[in-house]
Length: 125
Figure 1 (tube, one colour):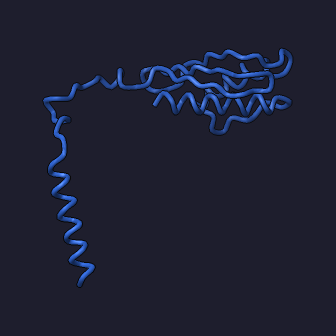
Figure 2 (cartoon, one colour):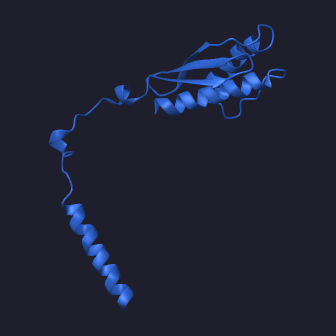
Figure 3 (tube, one colour):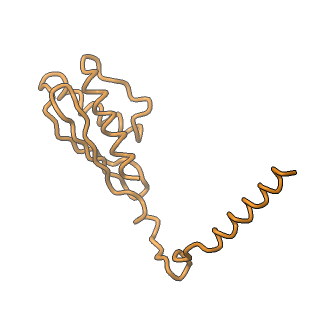
């Protein structure tokens, strides 16, 4: 019985405090944004690759689909640098990194690139 009384008191206090909240988000105080403008347009992130930092900018279309990925890096010319375009194409095709395999021989670059893309996607949302 004591617990029930305590619960009722706590619930009553919670409703009281909730009723005293700020009503700044009423319909007359909010702006509406068209859906096409509400979608993220780009996200950026950086991850440490094999030859240095890999900076990516993930560009989204109006429907929220990845359109392109811009990259700045200092990965090795014959290995990591060759893996990035392959990874970029696969990520755009999959609209994310899920299911995208690492490029053989460029595991560190692949993992760093996919990590940066995932972070850029998260930063855009």
